[in-house]
Amino acid sequence: GDLSYLLDIKVDKHLFRALAQNWNPTYSCFTFGNVDLVPTMEEYMTLLRCPKIQIDKAYSRAAIVPTFLKKLINITGMS
Image 1: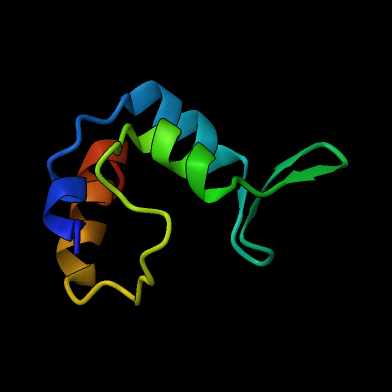
Image 2: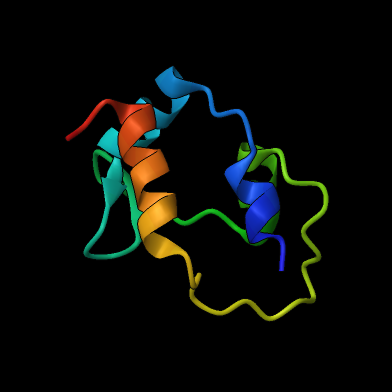
């Protein structure tokens, strides 16, 4: 798949932190007050700047989750 491409994407740290603060893990959506928003595949592609991802592909859970999580932790400055 395109996992290796996703790991090389430059992430706007301020935007990522703002999005992370509004993410509701229970419902897997963004919550702004009383409004819940669930991005479409196209919106995720735009947010991540991933023109290579094909919408008609079936994706399974990433096999390299710890590496990806480590990168997210480094980006957000969490420990």
